[in-house]
Image 1 (cartoon, rainbow, N blue to C red):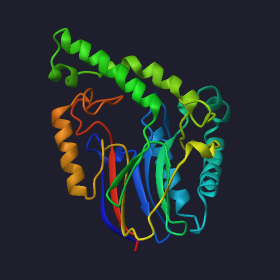
Image 2: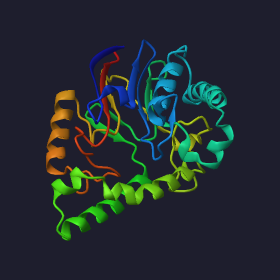
Image 3: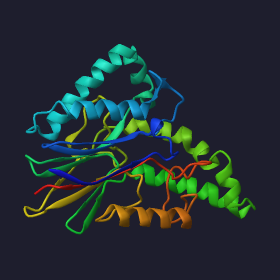
Image 4: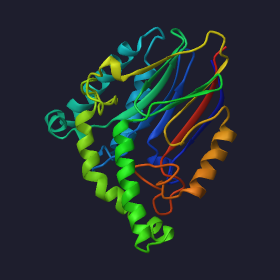
Length: 277
């Protein structure tokens, strides 16, 4: 496999706090998106999302190349078990699931010629876009949109809403903490979603894409892009257009968060294009 294009950017511009990362060797290519924290907890001076992304990347590097997604998750979860024991938080995270360092991941296996999507992530392949959006995020994004549209109707300006604390996010923050009850929960519940956090994931919550036999290139990305395209240039141009058209992320690109004061975008973003043949 060959990396044709690669790009990673922190939403703030400070790469030291970026919660995205990626990985590529002769066996696997992956984009890992550490979840934005809804608490102020730091572990070893790192946010929960950054810690999770780094742990997962290191775990993937230990794989031999023939593992299934269940085996990959098992290897990662062993690393999590060691981490939770070292941090002495094993009991606390059971009571407060939102304190778990967690991440989404999209990973391509050359051996299996499949892409597995765990949580929010994107794949572009053979002219088709694949996404894996959480339903619960769509619900909370709608609530935040209603809150901010109401502020605009009351006379607030876009600039005022961008310049202060995101009132929409602050109001839905307690709700987002409650959504962690649905992490890796029963697939019978339409609110359940997969996340890598050290706990078992029901296989039904992992999206599998069997790639066409003759596909030569694939692109993987985090959800820091509203949607991705065949090239990085096209993808960045589309993001730029959307950020200008909807900086609050309440219309075309409804999200649980907008562009925070002085930030460059609404989320960290990563895009990689790989030649697999």
